[in-house]
Length: 380
Figure 1 (spheres, rainbow, N blue to C red):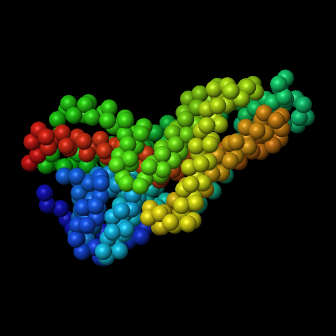
Figure 2 (figure 1 turned 90 degrees about the vertical axis):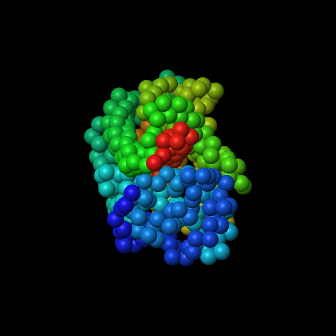
Figure 3 (figure 1 turned 60 degrees about the vertical axis):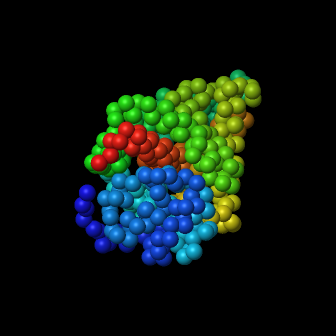
């Protein structure tokens, strides 16, 4: 299939991070050493070739950048120091913007001031909504329950907060799902060389779910067991807290101070530990730059980690202020918590880091669909 060459493609992609496209002379070492590459899905070299030739549509329709889990072996052994591992990361940012019909992902990834401005704008909007729909405690004794905890639902009624949760979750889900559909159009629908059997969409969905839950492909990379486990722990901790807040807020935001062994508190504590351990590990890696996949940090890597850390910290502070019977501190900390949480979710879920949690397993799913076609010789 013929396609137009975009001579500005390298310049466009360089805006998404470190670009070293001309250093590669296609020795194939990176592809040979990668434990995840396979027949039909060769990377990182394939991506380099498409970039250098200006094949914009080829890049947009590729799944390979998402199949890479950045173990760094390719960058360590590259004889030209072309850094193919980081190139795959840059392409993932670029592809996130390609799928996004709103154009916001591109603005967030290419303009530090735009991302910071968006965070501040959303935080101010949250502040105004919070002070409009909550109640500041006066006469602290009126806000304390019989068990000594703060009557948090008297300060910030869970039904009002829950309504905001659902509006935000619905909006973000619509954007992310529509972006995934756009991803399908570019990778599957527009690829006329492959005819996907309908049954494959059903049979491969179980592997998709398993990949989403476990990120099992990560385990195929040598020397990444700790990285994979902490990444998985961090992701599952986030999913647990997100699920409790969006779907079970009445149970999670309660006026009752439960015993420490109660499931509500145990789940919250375990998830909080998972978030803190993961955040500290990844921040430490980026500061020390000891690992190949942490040597080059995009500013969005840092804003994500900072927002996640502040959200986790204010969340645990809010919990302890509540069970300690400190209504004013609870009210203020709840506000700060939302001013960190809402911008993080609004920006990261559909447009930045958290969106990768959806795109990676979806890309594996699409790759498996194409493999099913290859097996049935449904390839032109």
